[in-house]
Amino acid sequence: MPKDGLGTEANESKGISVSQQSYTQLVEHLDTLIHLLPSDGHYNPNATALKIVTLTDYSTTLKDNNQAVTDSATPLSNARISRDNTLYAGDTRGLDGAL
Image 1 (cartoon, rainbow, N blue to C red):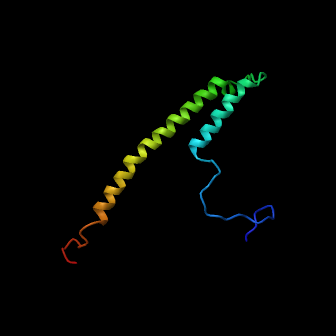
Image 2: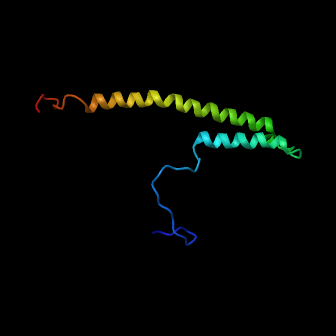
């Protein structure tokens, strides 16, 4: 079995990933962290980008963008199916009508 960079055997299973690295999962993890921040009474960053309100707005933007991608995937998939049916399905004769 191949070894990884640490000299240990690398696991090469081809199963379903459980790494939770999808965009949806990453945003959910961000939301979890954002919800934990107020419970720490010492979290009060000076940087605007790290304030809870800014992080919440960023999370909302990520969710909106992810939804836009999801919404556009169906029409794209349907257009590709239609194209493939037009190009590859049905009549297999050439332009001159010969088989």
